[in-house]
Amino acid sequence: MIQIYETDSPEETFNLAKELGEKAILGEIICLDGDLGVGKTVFTQGFAAGLGITEPVTSPTFTILEEHTEGRMPLYHFDVYRIADIDEMDEIGYEDCFFGIGVCLVEWAVYIKEIIPKEAIWVKIEKDLKKGFDHRKITITKE
Ligand code: ADP
Ligand code: MG
Image (tube, rainbow, N blue to C red; front, side, top):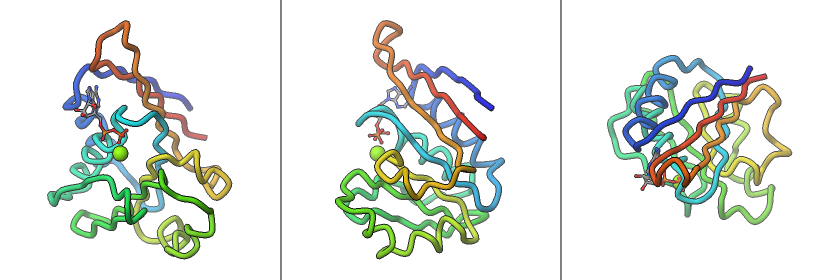
């Protein structure tokens, strides 16, 4: 199933993701795809808000994984931009997150495609400068 959304501000992207966070189910893995600065972290922040997380959510660039346990279920926020080798995912125990008791959000998931389960939801965020600097096309693909 493919759903396409268009947003024209960070708030709109936040709110779209918040709705998805409110509806999120246990075991969900959301893969965020899109260039630097396109809005993957904004999306994550909205999703986290939808789960009931109020603490700040930033890109865990230097740690790969940031865990938020404050919401109605744990959120495992990965940013694998700086991953050098897939073994690093084993070292941080990603399987306990992917197949655990929460939901996962993975920024730059294309870098670890070989370990992403086929049931994962892909969220592709793209700019279209012809439609304005803050315009984003958000394509959500589920199996
Ligand atoms: P990424 O995590 O993909 O590198 P960020 O979420 O950190 O990107 O940053 C996205 C930037 O784009 C923010 O500065 C945000 O304010 C801005 N922005 C502008 N328009 C939008 C939009 N429609 N949706 C999301 N972010 C937007
Ligand atoms: Mg980011």
